Structure formats: structure tokens, C-alpha cells
Image 1 (cartoon, one colour):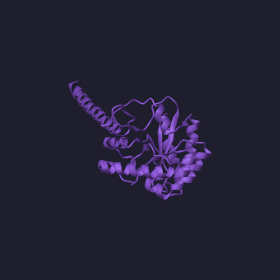
Image 2: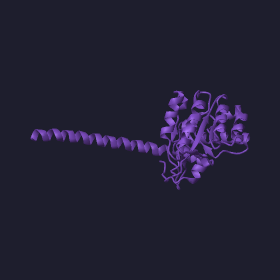
Image 3: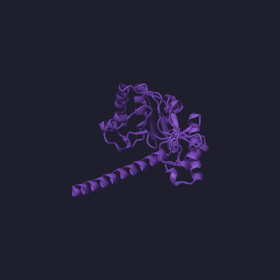
Image 4: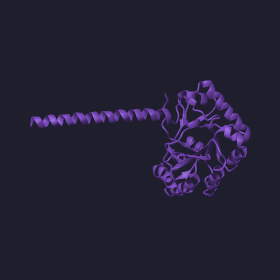
Length: 253
């Protein structure tokens, strides 16, 4: 009996270590998530990634940094599917090359957000470099569409508390995402659909791309829209999600 107890004690110790390790890992993941996916605070800047809402509303967002062949097919699909509240985060250096496409996005009823000017990671820059890039991007887009954007998605989606402070100082709210379609990997239409539809919940912000590097987004998008509607979802703008959210405030460190 004593031998049996020793064996059980060892197993109990091993199990305890596993539980502790799991809790430690979960804690790290929570901290990492809190540094990126936070809605707002009353004491500091805000970064929006998802609305905590009981309504089945979601938002489509698209990043664009180069190329001209994918934008119009995506705009056509959104029009055909009567989705007129998407947000396009455009790199201003791209916008300078294709101002007519930027205007067309706006004219079709969608929102224009800033994706910075240079496609560089803001977290690797000092405050003044970040500020200058944000200002330059805003000026370019203002000249093209006649208004300064208020939403910013930093290049690569990379930001920290310092970048949030700089962005807020220039009048921007940073917008992240909660569902990444991974369409930039070109994994196949079916895979893109599977990555998005089963995991989408109320208040989610969905990330897609409209650069020439994505080859399958325009094919997956109509399937995704139809399947999400079949599940009861409706499409909203980022601004409406931010205005109507019940999200709990949490501070970024």
C-alpha cells in the first residue's frame, strides 16, 4: 500500500506541475493579448479589435499596400452582395499611385482608413518617425478624398502603448482585428472560408487584403458573406461597432 501511495504522489506532483505550466502559459497569452487587442480606456489611448455586443454585427476590413488588379473585383463583390460599410486601410504611398481607386472606394460608400505611408513597423521607430509617417499619410489621403481619416491600422498591425499615444495625439484611433482570414497566404478558397466562418462571433472585425498579392480573396469573399448571413450576421462599419460596443475598458501597458 505504501508503494502504491508513493506512485500516486509522484503522479499527483507531475499533474500539479502540468497544471501550473498551463496556467503560466495562459497568463502569458493573456498579457500578450492585452498588449494588442484592447478597445479603450478612460485614462489613455484606445485600440479597437472587437465589440462586445449582443447583436450579430460584424465588420469587414481590407488592407492595401500595392497593386491595382484586386481592388475593383472586391468592390464589385461587395456591391453585388450589398455590403456597403467595409473599411479599407490603404497605404498612402500606394494611394499616391492610384488616387482614382481610393476615390472609387470612397464613392462606393466604404470608409478609408490610414495604413501609414511607408510600410514599416512602427514599433521599431522612435516617436517622431511614427508621428511624421502618420501625418504624411493623413495629408496624402486628405488631399485625395477631401477628409482626414480618423482610423489607423499600423503597417503589419504592429503597435504598442507608445504608438497608441502618438496616434491619439494626431487624432487617430488604432483598429486591429479579431478574425484573420490569412488570405495573404493564398491557402485556397475553401481554407480561407474555413478560417473565417466557423470562428466569427458577434462584434468581430474581419481582416482581409486587397493587394495584388492575394489571389483568392475575391473568390472566397462571396461565399463567406453568404455563409455569415445564413448564420444571422449583418455587416456594420467600424465606426458603428465602436460607437455601440459594450466592451469593457482595459489599459495597455
